[in-house]
Image 1 (cartoon, rainbow, N blue to C red):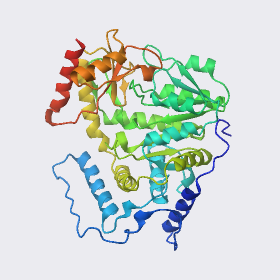
Image 2: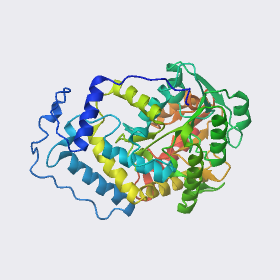
Image 3: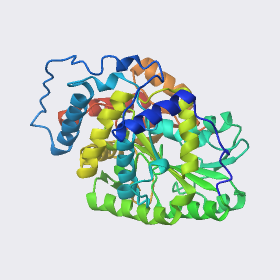
Image 4: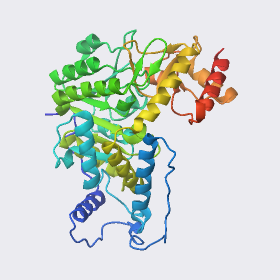
Length: 428
C-alpha cells in the first residue's frame, strides 16, 4: 500500500476519449471520431509530399549511424506518405510505444513487467515531465528526502505540492550519509535520487540499495531519476575512461537491486542522454498502476496531446537502441576525454572517490568566490555559461557546475579545448 500517494485524480474527459479512440485504432476497430478539435486529422489521408528523400551519411561512426537510420525511419513514418504527426496522440503513449517502454524497463532495469503491463508504464515529453508528475502525485505534507547535492528543480516541485523537503548530507567522498537518513526517516515518506547523480557524478549501488532498504522498511517510496545510467565511466585521480565491461557490471548491479525493491519505486528515464536527443523530449516511467494513473491525469490536465512527431521518431530510436545498445558509447568516450582534460588542466574539481563517475557534469570550486556572482561574471564578460552550485546544494556554496556535453564535438574536440582555456583564464 503506497500511502504517500494521492488516493485518486480524474483525467480530463477529452484525454480519456482520445486514449479510448487510440486504443480502438491499435486494435483495428472502427472509429467515428467526434471527440476534440483535432484539426490536424483533416489532412491525415492526403499526400502532402510526392517524395521525401533522406540519405544517411555512410561515413558516420557505427554508434551514430544507429541514430541516423532511426531518425530517418521516424521522419518518413511521420510525414510520408501521409502526415501522421499533425494529429493529436495520447498523452502517456499508445500501446505500441508503451510496449517499447515495457521492454526497456525489463531489459535495462530488470523490472519484472509482463507484456500486458501497459498500466505500469507511460511515455512522456521528456524525462523531466515524468519526474515532475511522479513528485506531484504525492500527498500534501509528505516528507521528501533527497541528498545535499541534487537536481535543483525537485525541491521547488515538492514545495509547490505542499510537501516538506529534507536534505541528507553527503560525506566528504560524496557518499550519502545513510546514518542521518535512518535517524530522520518516517513512515510513508519518499526519497528522490538521481543516480548517477546530477550534479556530482556520484555512482554507488551500495548507497542506492541501502536507501531502498531504509525506505521500504518504513513503507515509503523511492523515485529514481535514471537518465544517466549509460554514462558511467571509470575514474582515477588522473583520468576518466570509458570501459564497456565496467559500465555493464554497474548496470547489472542496479538490476539485481531493482528486482528486490521495484514495488516501492517509480523509475523515470529518457532518450535524452542515452541517445543524444535532449531536444526530442521522449521520456518514460514505470511504477505501480495507481502511481502511473495519477501521473497520467496530471499530464493530461496540462497538455491535450503528446508531442506526436517526437513520439514517432522517439519510438524508432528506442526500438533501434534496444536492438543494438551502442549509441551511448560514442558520447561516453568524448565525455571521458573532456573530464580528463579538466583534471589535467588542474581545475579544482569535486569528484567521487570510489572509482566511478556518471552523468554529464563536473563541479568546480570557485576559490571562495560567490557562485551566483561568478556565473554572472563569466557569461557577461567571457560568454562562458556555467551554473551556480547553490540551487543544487540547497544553500550557499562556492561551486559552479560545468556541462561536459553542451559544447558541440568536432575533430580533435578543438571547440571544447578552446572553451576550457577560456574558462581557466577567467578563473585565474
